[in-house]
Image 1 (cartoon, rainbow, N blue to C red):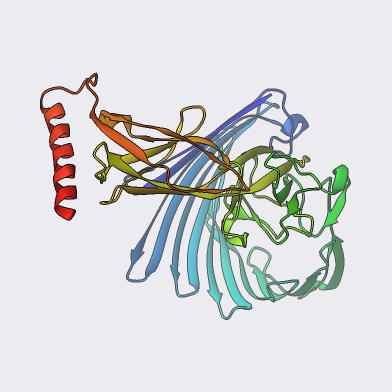
Image 2 (tube, rainbow, N blue to C red; image 1 turned 180 degrees about the horizontal axis):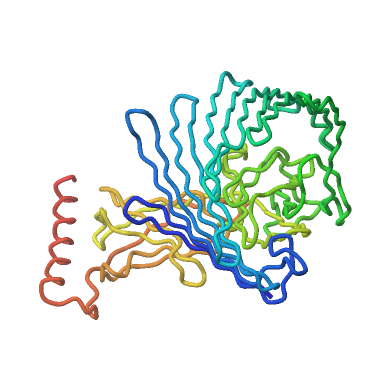
Length: 434
């Protein structure tokens, strides 16, 4: 078994996040295996950012502590500082490591990155050691090209100050979707020349019926989701031959938009970024018919590695309701709250009448409802049942009548007097308007 808790809080301009994990003979990609399996892990992070005359400055620090089943433990303290301005970023990162509560080493890296254009980037770095020996370890300068689709190439110069050694490298790769192929050429001055041809792919059970697929992206620890969006013509929540698939629609998985649905309305989201309890919603902007809404407000599923749940999301034709609220003498009741109630007595929506006593509710799903005046007004008022269907989604003229104050209401003294003044004011304004 395993337990994992995460928490976050903003405090005094700092964003604080923490994580605590307990493992009881538990092995996984995250918890590791065998003697390297974790027994406990805790981490605390703090970060803040603000603008300066030189650019955006970000400061961060975090500490983590891990205990292993072997009895060993590891602690790390990390600090980061970065300054960004107009496509350039300068940063420094230090790491202090303790093994079994004994200081092991402290290292750091200074780096500078610059975006030359949409496709070209330049990066340089300097690795150094603070303890046990204060020294500069290595330097790197690299220029990289990325067409933002499939092809990537880079060239770099590295110098190892420890061994007084310099190397030149050129690398190119192409994403074939099913696998990543590339070639690397390296000339180590004084040592010689070498070339590497490489291919890499990842296999995961994310195909139909759990079959394995190949991808150039890593599928390790990834989650997947199948979703189907369709127009539920019979309003039963189940996809049948009578229903209409919605091609080109998209889902949002914990807010992250997926690819378009195919002709059958099915979306194969292989790489959602979420794990655990996940919210699945329709991206409303991808539904051409403005009257179509989801049958429920949202849907939930649990995403785990090596699983692929299927979620059906039916869309139904929404309608509208409207009417007027009158006093017993036929005069309109303005600024009165009107509520839309479902069959379980839950308030779904509420609105306020205009000066003529008119109200309306839009984008109402098919179902049985009740229209009523807000009971907190302490008025004797009628309530009206209403049925919205996909065949008849627009229901007009649902009028309510106000007989007066509720004699059994608990409102007394100044509260009751205020209600009476409101009704008199309504009647006076209506009379002046007439």
